Image 1: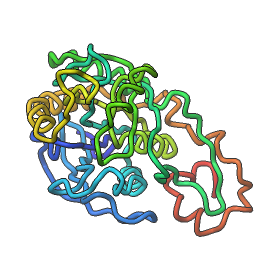
Image 2: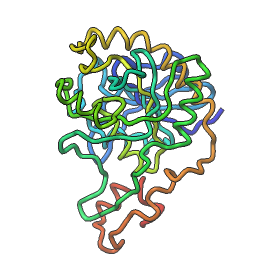
Image 3: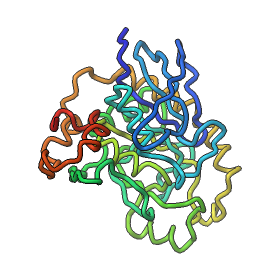
Image 4: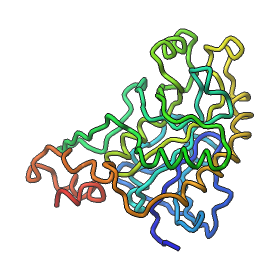
Length: 288
């Protein structure tokens, strides 16, 4: 059994724990960007040490806009995490993605407003490649695990990340459909950007809860409707994640593992010492 915490799990609405997790302990992590959503629950899952974080905090107290995305991802990096599996509730923008089905998106579209989604700045500039925002290796593992546990799953598609906390207007929902978008949520794009900067593989297991408001039979999205479908999906999501954990390779050969190799543009001698110290877990391979 490996003692290294190489796998991170971020649980969204409805997924606040991992029932199969054993040898549990809470880890409180302090980051240069403030506190994460809460303590990380570290334990053993299918023979692997993992770190679980409830994205919205205990009791679901933090809105998508309020989340400290940088602290959440940086905390994973401090724990040694190399893979992050995110489970997230989404609305469906297309008929073929029915409630209680799963989607493994491979693209994101940003409709948020001014959220901080980079570790860089303050004298250090880096531009990571982000054409393919989801780790293809991890996305494939997640899809294979969905299939293995008997879930109805769709591979690929675009996740629209909206600001919230309100759900979409009918006009917005129809526009996203016209653009060819597939699912809609409020959290995952910032996580994906930050994970890439931290050289962590990232993939989303999207749990469809509703048809958004575009569907003539679902023109009023309610929390009650979403919770009912989340409860139905929670067991499946936990089975998928547990199976995926057991499939992940030890050695990473994907581009995520070296995302910063050609991304840092600032001369090392021009970077403030404090920034070098704060970002050492991320940049020490490239800058002393």
